[in-house]
Image (cartoon, rainbow, N blue to C red; front, top):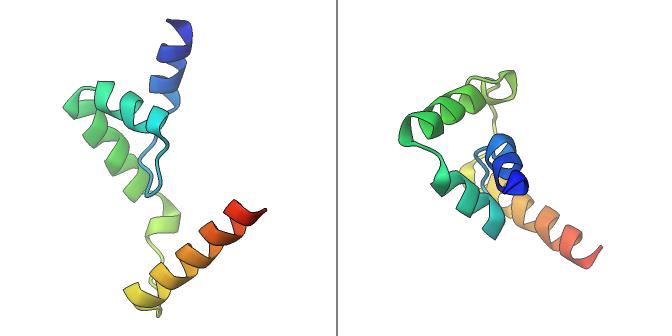
Length: 71
């Protein structure tokens, strides 16, 4: 039970969640999900504009994911 609570405390919005992340996220009340999403989107990293297109970002993300899988 303690590990379940820890997972809920640690879960953050993610573009690539694990199965455990999805379960922990789904266990959160909707208002807590919104609070965490707003906090993540309010982070300074999300405020920087990019000249990259969505296609370029997706291509780079896939390349990084492939590298992690092979590593």
